[in-house]
Image (cartoon, rainbow, N blue to C red; front, side, top):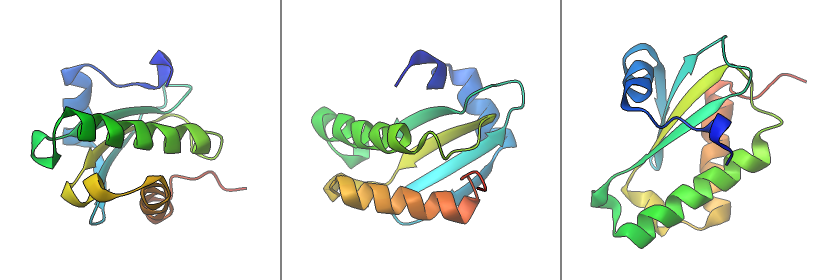
Amino acid sequence: MKRKYRIKKNEDFQTVFKNGKSIANRQFVIYMLQNPEEREFRIGLSVSKKIGNAVTRNRIKRLIRQVFLEEKHRIKSGKEFIIIARKPAADMGYSEVKNSLDHLFRKAKIYQSK
């Protein structure tokens, strides 16, 4: 993921947590906030140590980033997302992660209307 797509600063995370809306399923929680100043969408990832060791956490983050990379042309711009992985995400493969996030995207109406 390129730098322009990332949320890294704590203050940015806190803004999305406090002012954004959340939607969840068993594997992930997504907080989203409309930010019209941004030309692209931005994502921040949060994977707790409770989920597993560093290898497991980094694997989950790579899978989530890959889903966003593949779906970026369908996602509305001007939004900020924070994705929090839950415990069941540790045992998922790529297709399961993609299906789970796709379910949340449709539920949250993140995709652009065609």
